[in-house]
Length: 262
Image (cartoon, rainbow, N blue to C red):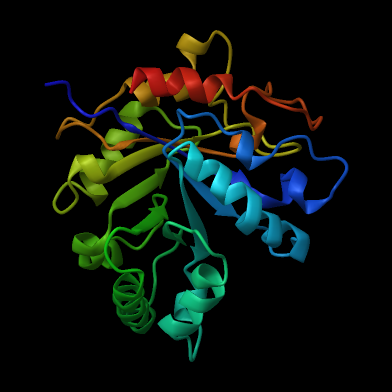
């Protein structure tokens, strides 16, 4: 029996979606290839109503036809605000857009004890509101609150680690320090970044493909076992060379090739 292939996940920057009506944008999330398993809706915050309407009525149904799950990303800030409630967060970020398959909470800092307790309580309530069959994911970096992740691990489908610009050996070190005592490698996804226009030069994508960090992440496994998969940030920039700031269409060739390595 062949093992299950690893997950190919990606963050699509909502402000660069054709559906926003911005004539400069060249890519739509609905064009993502079948090789993608999960795509994250990653908004800037000022996307027009037209975008959200098309996301619900056109984009999500098109992705579901390809068996791609669509998950909304929410900053941890929303969970630790004074007076925050799970019901309000669920309504604003999930049930207001029909067809979403789950929520992803982004945490990139260590919380105070009171913030952690509030985030844990609201996360557990969000998980209950999502119910069975919907994804509940946290994404983090080396500064993320490990104690919160440890307490929530039984409720989480995956933990995504933003390893932009790092080597597999360094990622292994982070896994050993942060996760190995509570997180199964099968729940761990390691992430690289495509080059954003006028963005950080992480060096994750370079030619030839076989020498790139993205390729190395897809091929690497933690010493503790088989990882859950890989993810990319700014998949709408798939194939753009580092330093190229022009917005342009993509065939998602890197995403297709990386999935084959999983």
